[in-house]
Length: 122
Image (cartoon, rainbow, N blue to C red; front, side, top):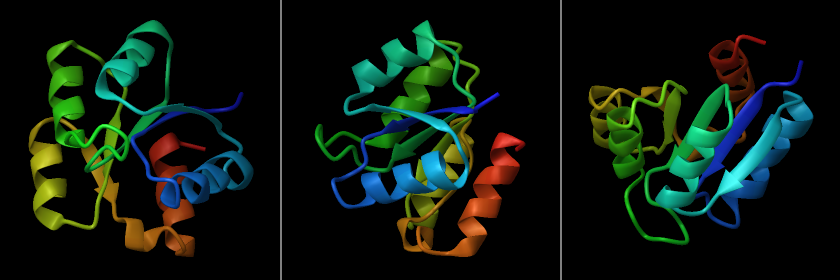
């Protein structure tokens, strides 16, 4: 069974690159959301194995940390992973209940595919 990933707020450059890795490389079904409200609605209405959220949502300009906070407050159980090279943002996301994430600088690394494989348990 294919794993389902919700990808939130990625920019036009990183989004397609991440989508290729997830859909072609890891054979995941990828759903996207551009806003926090859209992401929360999707997380509450369908099951996902993982939610990836950009530190700053590209189309909305809001913080991905707000999505982590609101999702946890709403009782959403889907693991949420922050996509950011900023160590301080990663630590804050984890303090809010996110699982350890990764940085955009890692998008080309072969280690990222294994990291996501481990996170998705595939």
